[in-house]
Amino acid sequence: MKFTEEHEWLRVEDDLVIVGITEHAAEQLGDIVFVELPEAGTTVSKDDEVVVIESVKAASDILAPLDGEIIEVNEALPDNPGQVNDDPLGEAWFFKMKIEDMAALDEFMDESAYKKFIG
Amino acid sequence: MPELKRTALYDLHCELGAKMVPFAGYEMPVQYPLGVLKEHLHCRARAGLFDVGHMGQVTIRAKSGAPAQAALALETLVPVSIAGLAEGRQRYAMFTADDGGILDDLMVARRCDDLFLVVNAACKADDIAHLRAHLSDICEIEEITDRGLLALQGPEAERVLQTLAPGAAAMRFMDVAVLDSDFGPLWVSRSGYTGEDGFEISVTNDRAADLARALLTDEAVEPIGLGARDSLRLEAGLCLYGNDIDTGTTPVEAGLQWAIQKVRRDGGDRAGGFPGADRILGELEKGPDRLRVGLRPEGRAPMRAGTPLYASETGGAPVGTVTSGGFGPSVGGPVAMGYVPVDLAGNGRTLWGELRGKRLAVTVCALPFVKQGYKR
Image 1 (spheres, rainbow over the protein chains, first blue to last red):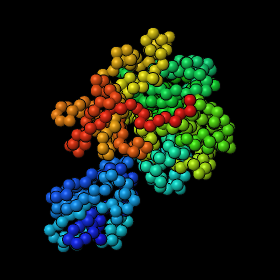
Image 2: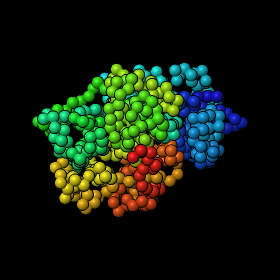
Image 3: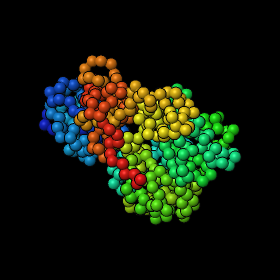
Image 4: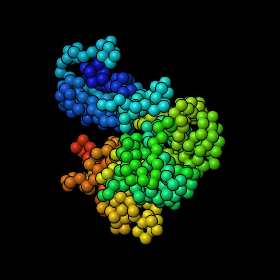
């Protein structure tokens, strides 16, 4: 699993990259009450705002970690936003995307680097 | 930035694992480990303890010693009947400005020989200066700085407080009393800011943490932070000064005319005589141009303060603005309040709020969003 400075996790499954947010991010955001996902088939560029999540406190954007195409989104999440707090690394993934160059994943942090990053 | 102040409960908040944030010049708990959502639901189901020690506590006493004189003096600053307030009772009031705007909202209690006021933290310095500037000839104005303020709110608040301060259960909504306790005399009012039954309790700073700990030993009581305090008051349809009411809104626009008793209105024995009376009494007579209303956004997206409101799904200029909004945990969806023109303010009216460039339908609805639990 890889981690971004935006507190997203990236996991490769077959030829797709699954994207979610870390436990640290979920904890910082507080209780999530709203999730808006992109449509499958959307072409995105790195740092595009692709997901809107809102906690009891504030709205935040989830950015596309890389250029690519959104292949599948977690349709169950908007009806059960609290899952982002309950199981951020598992059930509460946001979307799966196809990227051109899997080697680009190497630039992201591994788990120990991310742990240092969040201190 | 000036150094942040701390209430008497600061150490207790830290011990309880609170996340502390700057608020109105104080370091205050925004949430505890339970989290905003569960704190909110717990308060409605059982009981929640809030530190509101940042708020201002002020007494007003007539120099002559005659309580009625202090009451009449305060009536020159608020559109509320203070002289008609019985001993042992409390009323909601607001300081008005000459143009009819609201300088602050507050609680006024009539005690045996003084008036006891609770004002907003962010406004307290201005409020006290305002009181002193206008009432000092007749009254002594004293800021009470040696007492903290707790709020115990929720359906089990009565049972819990009664064990520590006998007499609490005999009070009804908006009663005030001094109750004896192991923590010294408590200045208690049966009121709050959640829509639930409950109490606000003024206690000396040196006993405040002991009292809070004693209340928290009851398994029904959880500490509640500012985050849930905001969602609780929003669901209860209660105004937040600085958001829903301010110097740019009048009490009538804000739907607070219930706080202006007949005796202060045209034809009453003590009609007018407060700042902004012309505008405020005029609006009571003819109706205001706009009104604060409840708003239920469709779907799940919260509409927060500042969201512009439109009369139609496309085109046109904004007709109003959301002044408070967010997710209502007890409602189970987004709730909001805002100002709209009177002709669009009818319950059931559909308006549109613009979020991230998209207009989403909202329905105008009656406040509060939840049933009040007051023991009248």
